[in-house]
Image 1 (cartoon, rainbow, N blue to C red):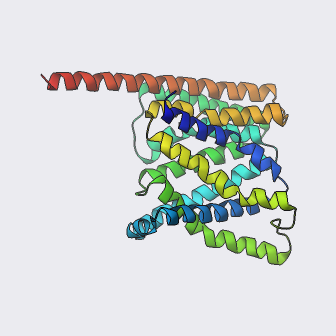
Image 2 (cartoon, one colour; image 1 turned 135 degrees about the horizontal axis):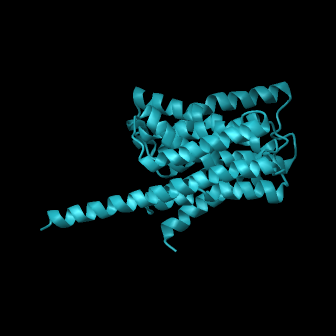
Length: 301
């Protein structure tokens, strides 16, 4: 197997099994868990940059525009992390997986609305089907699947912001967590003073799991950044479904979350939409590649 594919697949696999990790600390409130994730991620990334002597390079690229871009990205990322942790620890692993299943289609929709990108004819079909699937789930639930939608749109908007972000993944995440570090740490100090903090008060295992959140966050990200540079975008697009598929199976098979007929129908509609989207993207990229090769052949004559 191509090393890049293995590396990227490993990242998605780790993200797919993330619910197992957060379930071990389900007693910790989601806001505290998210604050710990920010704090320890920042400290770990700072140590990595210090070891690689890259702080100077990061500082040299900072300006008002960059800080504003990454402040927006940081808020979206923190919101995404908070909703995800809440969903997993509250018994909605299946719904969190739905959020990442529909995220690629949300990306296309956001690109159309905010970037004025033109959709190819067949791209309208999966978006329409996904909307039908979400509407069906809403009617069957009696309410919007807000966890799934919040995850899909916060991560979609985060990706949109990152399209104009000037820094690489490591430096970018370092800047995002640094902007969140003071409020996150301040909140944890407040919880400690109020006597409601879990870190150091709920056993050694609990403290260790919270402490390792930095590693849990950084490792798959670095694997993904490394793998993404080595594989085609089409392959990466297909690999991204590893994570929500594993999350879905974890929710159903391990945590025995109920899967009703209505959910199966709603998920089924969205999965069909994803199959159409993936097939259309693959065909379009192959067609564009053949056209480019033909143009290059003509130009070389």
